[in-house]
Length: 185
Image (tube, rainbow, N blue to C red; front, top):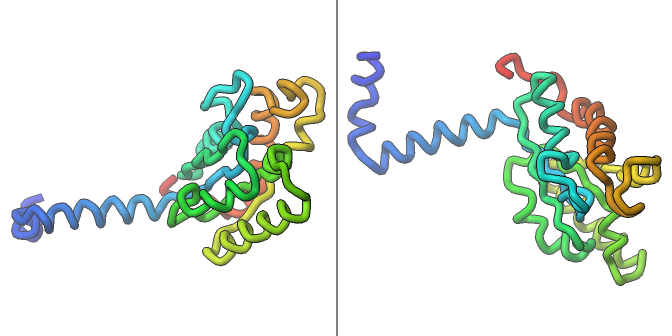
């Protein structure tokens, strides 16, 4: 410990250098974590009595951690969003360092008062921007879960059980994209 202090004590005496050192350590620790963003409308955000911890992004994060992955799954769902809205908030919703985006497109089209052609063009632009950043895109097919009995709040939004089912279905896809968990957790 003395050797550490002798080496770094001049560095730590200077406030700007100390701040730079702490920031660098923080950035290195953050870089070691896989960043996943769940992107879409209300079926990502949670709706009709689904609490934050019950959403599929939160449940997926817990499932991944239970399997040894040191990950953060950011819930970037916005109720009422559209393909155009998603395109406009893309850079703020998907921060630098993101490795995977789980893209839930279905609800975006339900909210759009525009043609399928325009919506498709905007979603293509979203996907092109994500791919240009080297981000892996995994589609979240909530529609496959939504129409199963007992998993919908109103035939449009998933209930808590529906969110759990979707997280369970997404788990192997995300694991495949991440690879093996690091030995450090």
